[in-house]
Every structure is written in structure tokens, then in C-alpha cells.
Length: 68
Image 1 (tube, rainbow, N blue to C red):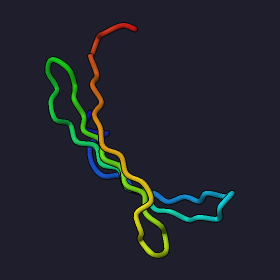
Image 2 (cartoon, helix red, strand yellow):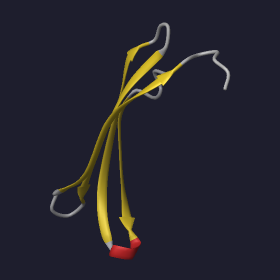
Image 3 (tube, helix red, strand yellow):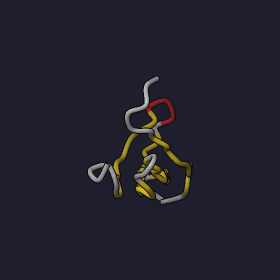
Image 4 (tube, rainbow, N blue to C red):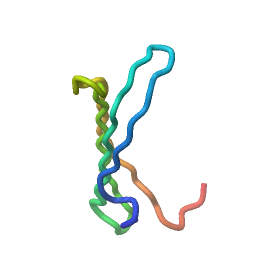
């Protein structure tokens, strides 16, 4: 999971609204035993003026070796 942890950034365009945006996501591995727990934070801002557009915060819980 180390390759996944860290900050990721990108940009995009909502074509129907001609809205350019910048997005930043951060993944923090909080625990690896008995399950892998990853905190996820995501922020989207207007590309030109920096106004916030969207944000999310949550967790992934991954059970290694679990089926289904």
C-alpha cells in the first residue's frame, strides 16, 4: 500500500459547463493489521479563482485474503 499513500493532484474540465477544476486527493495508511485502514481526503477547486467546489472524507477498509 505504500505506493498508494501520499498526495495526488490533477485537473479536469466539466465539458457541459465549460468548468475547469483542480483536484487533490490524499491517502494515508492508518493501520495494516488485521485490516488495512486508509483515510481518504479529496478536494476540488475552481481552476481559475480557487473557490472550493467539492470535498469528501472517508475510509477504505481492506481485508487481505478475504474472498467476496
